[in-house]
Image (cartoon, rainbow, N blue to C red; front, side, top):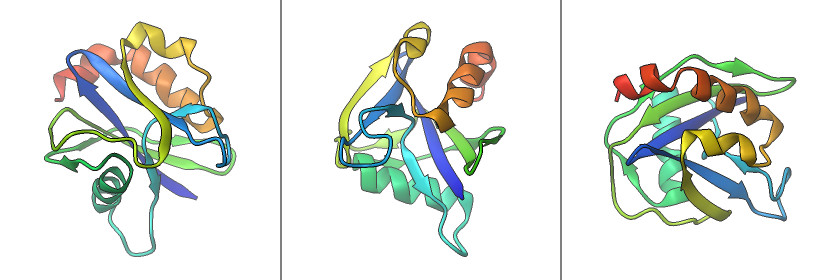
Length: 129
């Protein structure tokens, strides 16, 4: 399964979302996003998913290296540019965290390698924004 996700920066903090309790991995934290549909481009997918989940429109995104877990091919994008006010339409909770606080969250397994990557490549990621 291919899943696109977003690392959203705002004022030197990163958005994380806690999954709704009734969903798989309920209560665990993740980067927002969702499944790539047949025939959909990766960039179209992340723009659509973020509109559906957070009610914002991304102005620009940059794709970074992907990660493979047991059954998920995670395709991450980064951005700090969007229109609208963020609302948690599908998550139990959303919040911006300092990078050093990300390891304190209870992450969904597929997002752990990406979270670790962010910590080790934070400066280079910020420079692409």
